[in-house]
Amino acid sequence: MITAKQAYEIAKEWMGPFALVSAGYEIDTHFIFLREHNRGKLWTDHASFWIDKTNGALKIVSAIPATKEFDLMQQGKPLNLAEMCE
Image 1: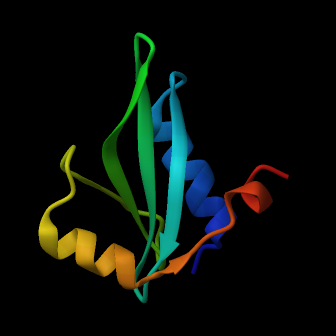
Image 2: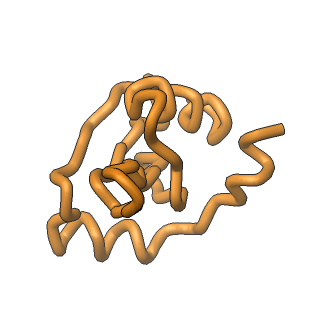
Image 3: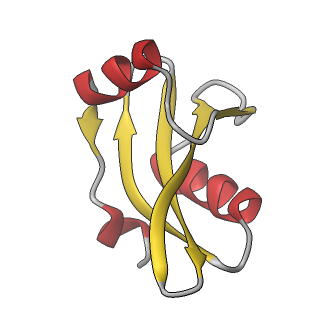
């Protein structure tokens, strides 16, 4: 099992240097992080990064999360991103 902080670091690495993590959630099987990407002066939700809790494997869900995945994410426990940055 990996921790939320480890999952956050994995997601940030895959997101790239010009992205911000806008939200994080924990569900039974995954940690989920939303990415905001800088496109000029506009920041937009771009993709969700699902990190498997057992092995840290990454699954990227489309730029606009599919309804099923979005519903699962919203049922999850919100993560405190400020704690991840410490």
